[in-house]
Image 1 (cartoon, rainbow, N blue to C red):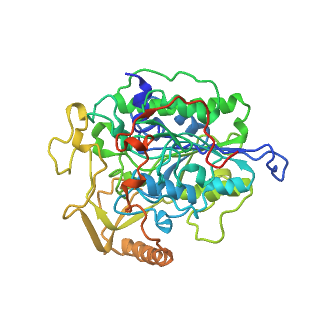
Image 2 (cartoon, rainbow, N blue to C red):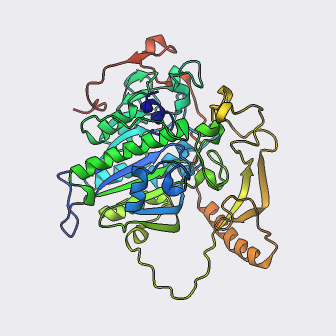
Image 3 (cartoon, helix red, strand yellow):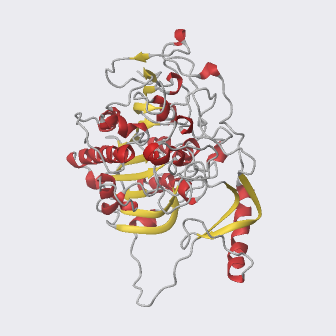
Length: 502
């Protein structure tokens, strides 16, 4: 089996806003050019899926090298537990509810009539205002709203990206299964591969997609990816393939002599898709996964590397999130975030660059980190709590009826708490032992947290939901005259200019 296919099925949908300072961009006050920025955003990757985050058998790879060469956060959070709202939060620095990027549907689908609102300011648009050239490669999942072969008002080129290479506007790879492991045939209407705004494969092929992402991201010669198996079988190969891709891009940065002038960030849009059994990643000791707000659904890897600026081999237990990336980058490049709307992210530059802990000759108190739930859903685990019997096949292989995200709509699935459920996730990261909030020491913590929650809710102006409006008229089709039998495989002859460009 070609490892390219395996590596791309679920995880190598890497979002790469490869943002580079243009030749005409102003220099920093000290005369040095402002840094290039590379942001890797994996898809559905578990907190413990790589060696540097505790996986017991996954090979060490280039992503782990990034962790050793920079700062690794142990309490790094995604804005949501599913792809679309999480990616909206990362790009805008705002809770996705403020933009309306939420709903019963959980994510944007091919038939969705909406997308990330055009009036939202993305970090790509803000960086362009500071003289940067911007590019995007990989999984988008923030809307299409297509009407024909060359249309899509919510694709990346309409959200601040100058160059858009190979991109997957939608999810999920399991619908696009050429090998028929899970599906009898690819679902054409779900499996679209774009070059900028043009569909050039429908349904797409996973083969060599990782190399296509690398080619488009850094415009260098095509190289063959690592082949081979791993003790974790297909999923381990996915991680290995994704890490190779990251390494290929970072190697090119070094070859170009830009290593000390490039910030690179690695993270994941949400936790592992546990419904895929052993094909869906692992959150380690953390409870739950994708579609849940237990720790496993929202705590993700967070790695920041900038040679000569961010101290190497540092681990931070500060609580930070992907919402903080936008304001932090704008602070670094000397720009600013929008001042006409509420921003939720915070500048964490001081954590990244001023890592100089005070000497502590005396023992210090153990750090405590508390979390409260006002609503919970059933904890879904790989081998338990699912309604259907025989969910996982031989060796933990997911059966056909488990490849979809699924929901949590059955009676008794959701629990509301009049008194919030509270955990000390430093001592109990599995959220197995709720604290007795009637005890004075725990009640004091809850009494401090509740007003903060109420203040946050009062400040949260929630826009109408955008994820639930759908129409088949919006489904992208490369051959509209044959809809819904949409099939094409065009020869790619270089980047496709976005509509309206010269």
